[in-house]
Length: 161
Image (cartoon, rainbow, N blue to C red):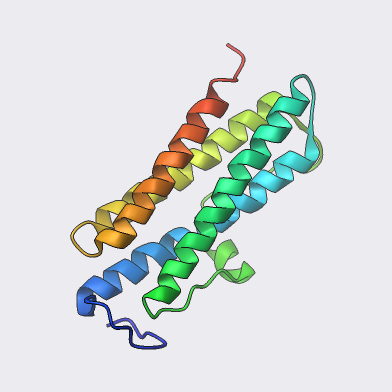
């Protein structure tokens, strides 16, 4: 059984609690990683459509940061300890190497779309694990995945054909 920091008065224990905390913690580092990568793209963006994509990356980042906070706080709510330390995020990296230096708009769109797709895949895996274990955490994950999928679509729609 997962060692929790404190007992909580919720009807969630044993394997259900282990599965829930594991699924949420497993998704937290990719969410933190994509937040960092979004800001890197935002800072170094250049080219045609700079302003609209620059602002769009900040909109996506706001939702990702809220998701990070919600997932971490759900872990703690259930009596666990959220691990978002840099070493943990690096150890569980799911992304390709981010290019150094300035980043053209088209390249940024491709990278961020790929990053969002990976985080959504991790979120969908979390949803599968959470199903039947904890409907509150499952609902949280479903909402986050839905928002990230919409951001992916809106960014993907800006690619040059």
